[in-house]
View: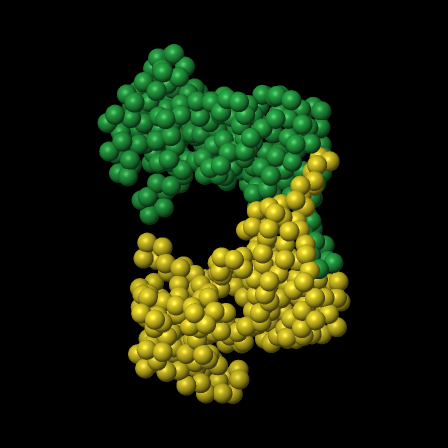
Length: 242
Length: 242
């Protein structure tokens, strides 16, 4: 059976009522079974659970080989340029702590594979209390809907000792988030381009990045995107209430 | 029932035959159960399994509150200065990848709690194949038996951007390891002291560290340790076959 990401999300919520389900992780060894209570383990295995659920539901998919980059699942194994599904999970009481993608790899890959930008992110907000796992929220989002700006970079990034590593999510579901999510693909791309320029490790990419990306996007979708300069829109994405 | 760490280890191997047992991790949610195949999850939950096993065996213990520092278990809840048990696990096909302790915290704590140095490390060398967990090796070691020197530091440390973070284990079970494990507590302490001096973040500690530690150790055990200078013994711990 073929499903879109939206249909997957709807089935999880409506058919299988996962927002009112309970679960748990049991490790059995040498005749002793224990319920795992470590919260971060859940985040790591939700993607494996979705795989099991897709199989149970007889929904077609193919796994991606590259675990560093989206997507996790190709929902249309005959066409790996559409219906891409990425699974993320975070502790709903703590806020999104997952990585979106390696920044440098993402900057290069969107030129080669502009359709990656249309991947759907199925995001689980889980809770674990005394070993009982529940899912408090389930979202289906595009990448620009879960990313935002930050104090020192146009895009929220993980930066260690001045080296940019990962693109990180914002608190995309809260109206009181310090930084609001991007409103559209073009604004996300604007922040991405400015970050590519600001980051010394990708600066050599930045001169032709926009031209190359726009040509590639046009070749794939037949649409000429208009990416604003970051300076034109930065004001809209500054920290709120500051 | 009271047990020493050695008795715990013997029971695991001889009574419960864990070296020939099989196990697995199952995550059940929304009516779908999956067998977890991620190897690093095992390392994170082995300590939880030992807790369950101790309970099943009716062996007394108390959990430590500080998860950053050894031990995990006090096997004598009436005396938290002896019979300390720390559990570690690593993928037997890849080699030890766990942290021993935060370097700075360890350097300070051994002065206050010299008995920490006598904690027993119960180390599981596990294997996970297609979701089936087996334990290939089980060791019971002292900290100096699983640590070693390294190319740039007297002690093997995790260093990121010139900042020392963790004390790391050597390939302690292999005669062909590049760096052999320390032969005795005193040699471990020698490497520790020289590392405290070499590391800019702990240098202010280093002038009085040895005096303070020796006084504390004597107060606790009534034994005057003789810690050699690192320069006197470094030769014995250099990389082998170089």
